[in-house]
Image 1 (cartoon, rainbow over the protein chains, first blue to last red):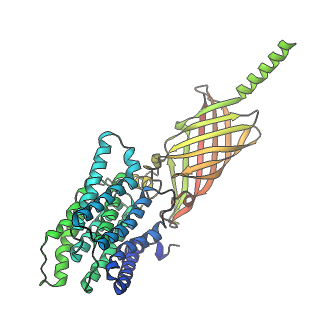
Image 2 (image 1 turned 180 degrees about the horizontal axis):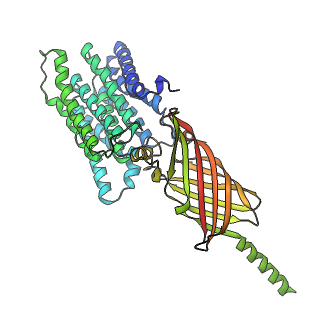
Image 3 (image 1 turned 180 degrees about the vertical axis):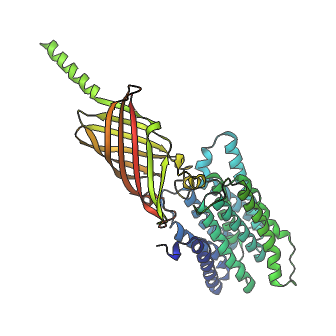
Length: 276
Length: 187
């Protein structure tokens, strides 16, 4: 008999949302700067429910999980240290490049010729664009969390359609956890923000998306859409606008781009059935 | 006298060498397959389409060994989407672990044919001891190509979680029955 703890909807949506909400509120009570950690703690909740903590030998998926958890700490450290912008961003991009090779390097090195260069350089460019785009939003909670929800849900659904439910569930967990942070951003005076959120999102969604392409059957061209999502930051803020309207101004365009990415996977599928 | 002893020794050694035979696994007649509970509704069957390996058999000394390599990406359950899923990191993670291997460590005989094969099964980089129960064995001449062939049917049961294949538990069963029908052609 399957308990509700085993239901994918609970594992990847309800549980991470609640965990993120509770943790963010608890941190906000005592140390608002840490409230953004709700995102990674929501993600960790799903990890514990779906796979358990990674064990040796670490697979590529396990390494992606570890990298996402570490990214939150690296981002938090950068938030605390407060380096100049260029150094700050440079460290983040360097972290992502190293993470790419640590998680997927073994598979990349087995590729030959043009395939190796396409996936390596393309992968580097992909994670760098996500990092830069999300970092630009780090101090703006509404576009930041809207972008995170769109990136994570788009990557998650695309990965599931591309035949990896595991990677899809993990990415969906980030979307659910970000949903909690978006809700709190509408309610709290000091909403959760910072590189601890932007780097976690870039690491989680970026590496899960690349993993779904390289390790599973998600088409590579799906990834072309996701770096466009952080461009919602160009939508000008209007502080006189009602808060819900502001949210929708960022949320809907981001989700529209994510939907196009998902559609690109759907249209390329040979069989439309799932749940076999 | 010395010549007689030498001749007898040589004939004994050559007889021993003839009895110990080396075989190549015939991939066209070797079928590793599995059965697992699907959500508790029914038992799902699947097989691997590509296998290679070697077999050594010495009936006189009652010794044998087998090394099998299975191409994990050749998994087939007659449903492309499901097969893609089984190859993904959720299950067999074939990009990182392209092969499933079995290497025997000890073979028990019943009469002059193996009855039990103990060995090390490696799936997803994790190696565990398993015992294959041989339920059928026959060696003889192939009626058409006249080659010496040995064939075996063997089975065992494992828990996929022991090998790190944990996704979908407990909905998709943990206990997995493995069956191997194998034919090998003498080199």
